[in-house]
Amino acid sequence: MASSISLRIEFGGGLELLFANQRSHKLTLPKFVPISNSTSLSSITSPNLNDTDTESATSDDAAIPDGFKRVDVTYLLHHLRDHLLKERPELFMDKETVRPGILVLINDTDWELEGEGEYELKSGDELVFISTLHGG
Image (tube, rainbow, N blue to C red; front, side, top):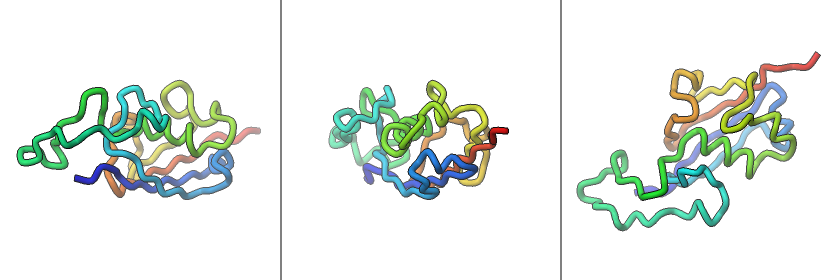
């Protein structure tokens, strides 16, 4: 069973300026992450998956270790803020979600139709973040 997933992240509408002016990123994240969404290295160490019954559990219905959850968009937002964002985190996140005025697309679909932060990420997903706010 793969213990990580690969994602493609794109920023546009000026949002890329907060991420070292880099529009496109490729990320690898663990399949299971702490329920707390902590992105510190000590807390994202992969849980011991050897305790699960691999004959009865497939990769889609594997038991989730205690204290962990499947990686979701909320965790991704924390990871982006803590590891890729270079300046002004308040322009990207407001509490546990993106700031109003940031359009989020998951595989070309508005994230509101996909469950917003609760959407469980899958390997190969593409997420696009676009700022729709322009000062004037």
